Image (cartoon, rainbow, N blue to C red; front, side, top):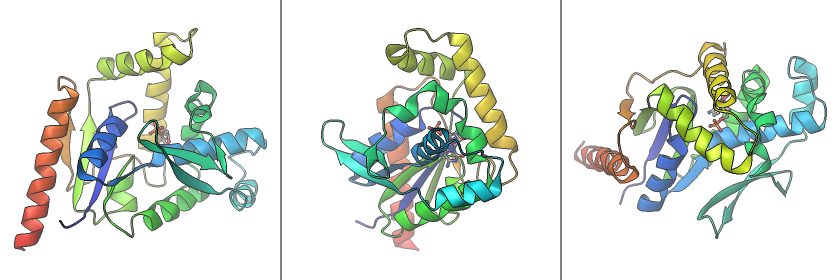
Length: 230
Ligand code: C5P
């Protein structure tokens, strides 16, 4: 069957990566979490005290960053490696979430991320989630999905996920972090978060995982069939 590129964009904690993983599994595609790349860069910047507002320092630091994905048999998805070190868990910590959107707004960080993501798409057969995948990384992707969910539901979902690993975390803290990241992501100068004109919208506020997957796979089938007919 013809392989396509599928992009999933949207605000923080809309369930994009859950859906992307489900789709990749069902289609036997590769799932790429572009947010993990910006998170790993942020971890490197913290560890090496790089000032993300200093473009010269940022450009120099990026020369020393190598990002790879490594398939993890036990989770059935890929972990991110920062210079060969598995940082999949570390990048989910709040200290990263609190800084990542500022780092990801830097022009050179964006150019670095986008170039690597575009290389990963050369083979097709990928599902990539992020903020600017349908608009900037793969503007010609065959299927673009813009995922949304009610803000209160997004906070509740993320709180549930984070409180398991961070016992002291509060709902207010989670809400403030999501609101801050969404604001920075949608107002930044270089590839801001926005819905691509040709993206379909999936509001999963009241959908089960099975229902959202079914809808998305229907769109995939329609795309593949329509591409064949054309
Ligand atoms: O997807 P996730 O929430 O893990 O992404 C972390 C952050 O990385 C986002 O809040 C956003 O600032 C940045 N990001 C981005 N472009 C992407 C993916 C993520 O700017 N394609």
